[in-house]
Image (tube, rainbow, N blue to C red; front, side):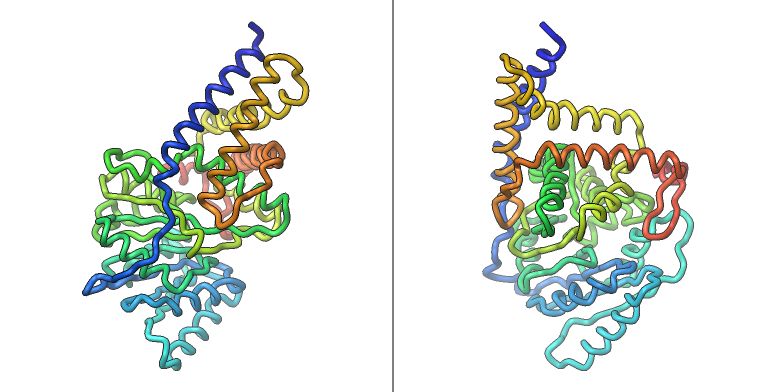
Length: 389
């Protein structure tokens, strides 16, 4: 049998396995349900946001949070060394909220001017927010997320009813243009097949865990037990690592679809998406060139080659690749419709999106090697320093 034939068989076996696993597990990815009743004594929730050069989005995010119907809430926005008007906008919003009688939620602003050694800026900012927080529950979120008014009420009710220590939600991801839409959603698709988020909902397993930056709500006791953000001080993928640490420690974790209650425009252009991802993709492989190489081969063999084989192999191998392409498209549409608010019809862009992601991975590795580290939000972190964590 030829090498291409063996590759075609292995590729089909891979997609059959991952499709069966996903179809069995996807029923665990429920939508966050509307709450019918809060606990008699609702716990105080501290929302912590790290913002660096976020003047265009931070005001809208905080205003949506100020409009939450949850009765016991405090918001802590951390201005992390911003050089734009982020800090000014936050202070204006704080004064405005204090004058409005119908706004009962306290808004606290922390301004950071110095980054200590051994910390990534965002992780340090979130840790500083935690140190000022008083809540029994901590909600770590990003500075560009829009919340439905009942989001936190629904989340707290769910955590209380299900005895959950960590709840993370997938947001509805908006993107302008077909190509950007396809690339952003393919990244989510590829990431989901890699981490298999539905497995985090299995209580009898401590691996794998998951955390999503848009919405990481955790009990204070669990967060402190894993060492807070100090334990992941230099991880660019802090949201994911937070979830992994909590799951490994044995805390009950749930990941749900928040497509009806959370919304984010992740990137505004394809170039911005590639530049944004190339800064932290290599960290997801723990800065291992071997793992990064395997990821690139995986993109080629399992995502790109089937489409090429479908077009150019007019024998049984092409027929196998045709089955693989059908499995890809069906799984993509099902998973994206489960996580996003609308069915995603850009499945025909899968080989293009995969090629773009392959390019981004290669560029992420090359830039990190060439620079000897990464630039993150204007600060340079050496590869030697990053590998310590």
